[in-house]
Image (cartoon, rainbow, N blue to C red; front, side, top):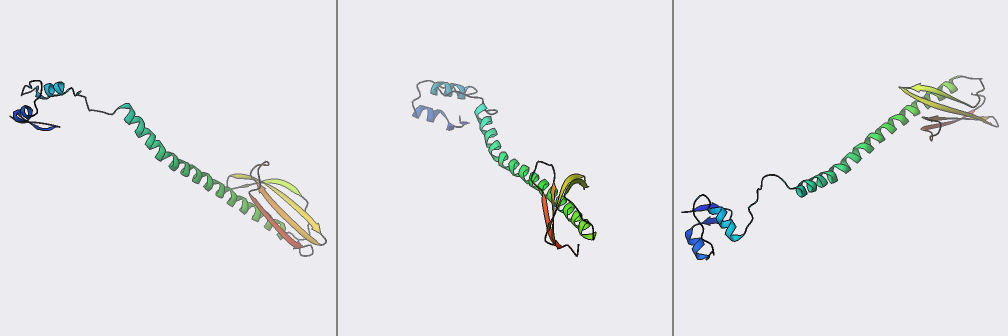
Length: 160
């Protein structure tokens, strides 16, 4: 009579040739009696142990953490580029308004404009250096931050 288990084929000849100290009954309970005689604990192998689950979670976290960090930084960078682009458009628009008006003397000022659902604060500085005007425009998102955009134009006072 042959029976199959993880040890391979077991039959009466194999058991007799290995001189097991305990008699093993062949039949339904053959494996249990074999494992008991060899003192091999029989485990239920269904499911995962807590350590296996924890190791899997750690491996997944190690893989996912850098990916999410890259995605978050990319999103933040994209938003900043969009803000800066809107700020540059606002600065260009304000500079074009100033340069299109001739013969008017402008002074330094700070005011706000709305550009594509964003409010920007524009700081305009006008300096007169011996007939040359230096007009600089800085665009801020908040009054405390560094400017998002800067434009400077040097023009002749007669052509201005």
